[in-house]
Length: 239
Image 1 (cartoon, rainbow, N blue to C red):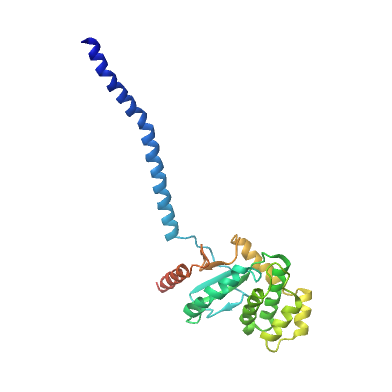
Image 2: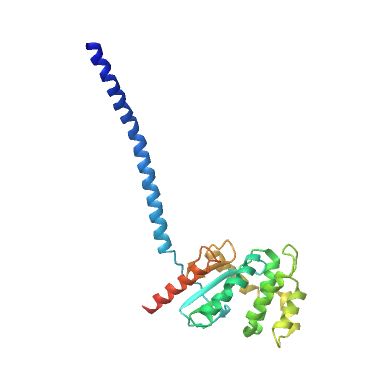
């Protein structure tokens, strides 16, 4: 009988050992779940309260729309960037129709020179047009993106001759001889230096990048998010 009694207790000891061995695993699981919950909470907080940067100076920048509009939309773009072309042809028209023409927002394009000398040459042309005939800048801006679509992205399609031709077609009254001379002398280079200082200040590493009142959008093509952010900024401006 004594041996039978001892045999009955052995399964109980093994069961207790099993429970004890499970404790660390349960603790690890609970800790893992807690970390996941914390990450979700932090992500939610970040989405509800995105980082807001101080807006750069808009002095000498090309502004489309009412300069007193409560919302400032900045596009960091490159005339050599295919994604910028797509944004300009798909998202930009909606932005113009819904917010810029209604006086709710103003738009600024910051030259972001990620494609070397070709980017610089194209941006020099646009800056020279702005200096000579600011009322025709946005026509030239659109024409540059249209020209991109007509050329092989891998080729050196931006040339002084192309820029002169676009200026002649889209900037009535421009002095083409002076335009050509200024292209050669790179007289608009200080404006590009200013733009790249802004690009570096905000650590912009892709184009297009869209900033709304200092808030950088995660997805430049998500017009629903762009629209909701602008609407939130408009509501905040009324308070």
